[in-house]
Image (cartoon, rainbow, N blue to C red; front, side, top):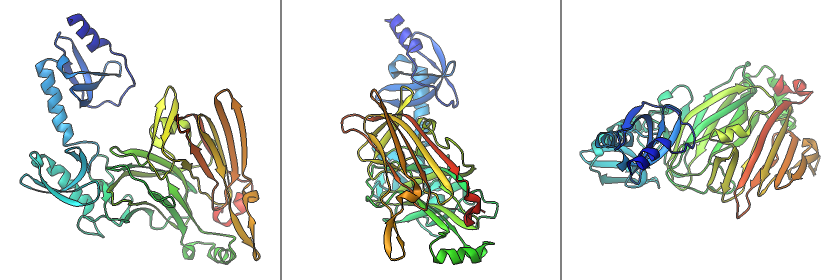
Length: 439
């Protein structure tokens, strides 16, 4: 029996490497000691990564000697009150937002955004959460705990700390905006990669015509050196000095989800990302980052999905995970990929997949004189499909023009979609330098 225990403890198969934290030494009941990083405990089991080779294991807690079990329990208690889900706390099985403590009484927002009070034996340990949440929720221009309407990115850094207070808001139909800059300069790069994390305490469904997140870049024409020309052509519709696009955000509950998108920014513009509140559900947003990028091949790839980033929107929850070198998507509704740019860009999306389908639609019309005419020809939307055994491949290309074809991913009802390739490329058109907003 001891040999079996030893084998289980030292030779369990690894699943994947993990980022390393403060290591601890654990000894099993047979006297074998390993240096590990503790990852989690659940159902009388402990999960850890062996430091020696970054292998991950899950074993019964009873396999450890008494001192090691106490070490795990000590780590578990510390982690419980310093989790990665701050400012959300899992109290009695529900994610809540502690905002005040008096003795053993905790005042908090529940997953429905309602203020509640409860006697909680370990309330004193939540003091750190309360202090952070008061700081995050009480910043100007709004006071109290109803939420923050506008936050300037880069100024209130504590609101976007990965260890400290996180911007959250719980007002029904409220929103929060992160201003990249009040007014970008003439040196503003034209494309940015925007990344951020979102936390929901429960799964939600958004209205079909709305999204959890949105992006806006709008030129303040009066500050632009070409303001006269822009104003003149704006009146005829030749130039539209702003762009709006939905931001990707999964609707999965109980964990921080990383999201990433390529967005168009303008010179002399107000540029911001905003997040909406649906179903009165508190929303957490943290680690927002804008990074300038140049148009090039493979700006976004399957590796982004493998790294945990989400690129899609939907009105119902969905799950993305790596499986055997590919990406598995389980979705309750179609996923949409949106890359909203303006004239002067060409977009190419290459995908290889199994189960379900990927397609693009662009039912767009505009007035020419007094009549509506389709503009699909202008954007030159093309779809090239191929089939090889169970795998499908598609290449979608188009010219950007203030709107984008909706790229839709739809899983089979019985099986998840398996993505083997998803590359997104952006290039400038040969005449881009002639366009006002590209000069």
